[in-house]
Length: 453
Image (cartoon, rainbow, N blue to C red; front, side, top):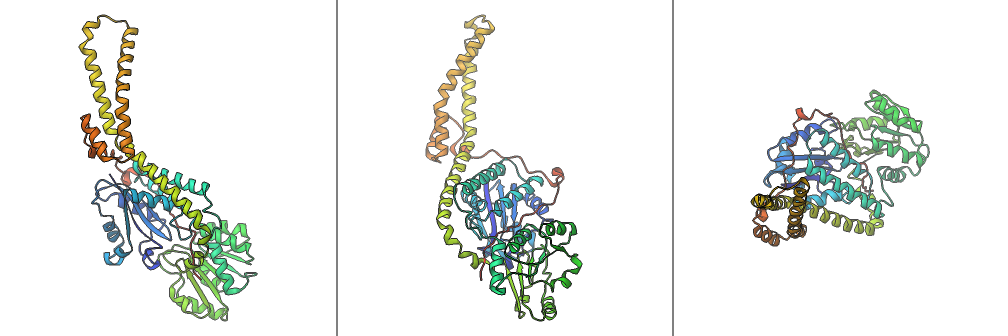
């Protein structure tokens, strides 16, 4: 069994590439099931956020080509996507997953949202029937490692969020946020965090719109905000000094002609767009209009880099902790993988015990039930004590990944070969979409980002 991870993130691919393979909330369950149907894929899940799209899969053969699935599913030429892809196998795949869950691979190291987003991705895969014992064990170990990083280091101190980055940028443009009107386009978690931080920093009126009006009301209520019907988006946007957009629409909703109309109605008063959607909500051409300032999630990376020095020591401690957790996971995994040899050894011992009891049965004569029980206990105890040292030796060799010693032990006891010992039990085949019969709606999106001025 091979663990494989393939994907792109903010380090390897610009937003122009990431938005080509972004998976929407509605599409994620279907895409996950399509991946599970690929030959050789036994279990799988997909993490899709504004900063990354990653496939994690358990494969029955190392030769399974997950990149081909991405090219085919998204209709992309390999030459367009391949230069941005990273691929990890087995131990390196585990290490990458653990680092992602612990927020060591995020734009802003230590941001708290990514762990919840990985958990959401896992929940979608469970509901879609595409995970079994292999990924269940792996993800639970990743969550435990991330929790240790959060509780045993100060990696989350001096946190940087979309809200704080937005405030810093807005101050550079407006000087003061006092009395500024903020328009939240899209009512997700990111918008809520941004609104809370902006209000704390003195922003004035909060306007909220969303395609689902009830969700907009829920977001607006804590801030005494005004709900705007989505049909009035463009008419209302002219009132806003700061627009934070995160709709998840497949195409830009703010185009150059909209920006020009906004500037005309605002009499060239500056307007600030923070586009935290992937795919982007604001056409890059809008940034060319005098008086309009547009920042997408990649544009914000440099700003947050200034905060990284404060976390460097804690990040080092966290990396060491993750390294230890990865090694512990693989020790447990190797111990589990030697189980077939241990089971075979126990079966051999039991066969010898039963054979000897049959051989001397006539000589024992008629025994009472109590005497039979005593003989059973005596012989079983002797066999268990005799087998204990070789079983411990097998486990120790597996934990230390000592293939030579493992091979010698298997040969000495006529057990499956060392290579066979290292094969993992196959997890249950992922259920089909029809068998799963689960809800299809779920999504993840990374909400903490890094920035640039």
